[in-house]
Length: 244
Image (cartoon, rainbow, N blue to C red; front, side, top):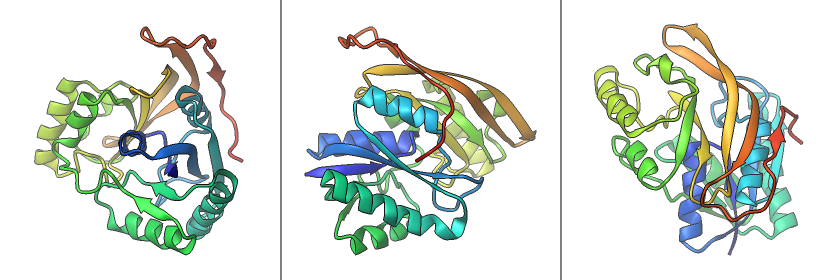
């Protein structure tokens, strides 16, 4: 059955893509909504050039739509899903939601209106085991933003390792943030996974806003051939662009 993933390029949407593929869905297109403002209640804020690189690495086409204000978030989702339904024959929408009823209910509403099915393979994951599960399944990611006290700013822009996960779990118990980052305490970008044909190398710099808030601002992303890859494509570079 043809499916699309609500794709941010972060750990949850990439892992949901993997679980959907394992379940037998044909992922025919990635669907990305790009808020043109900070602190969206419904969506993460992906980087268009990184989405392009991930689409290339996965070998799956990317469809995007920008949204300029919060009041238009649901309309943007409806427009994008209508497009991929009609253009790619999509029947199922895959979401990486783990515990957010706010997000899930709104996705269910729009998906139902369009006669589609919502699939949430990550729903109900244990937040204290989730990051470790990602690493065990080959999902490699870096931290792009932090907005919660207790998450060390030094890990911005750095690929997360097993020892980082152990540390984050301890800090989550102390400070009370969600160690799966489901509530937006931190946002991530996946740089490699078993389905990626290329690994992403991201250049950028840290921007520290306060003692508990900062982000990693990417300037460029490059795709490099993985050691085990048999692909003959040349590595590609993607500069910042605009959503369509």
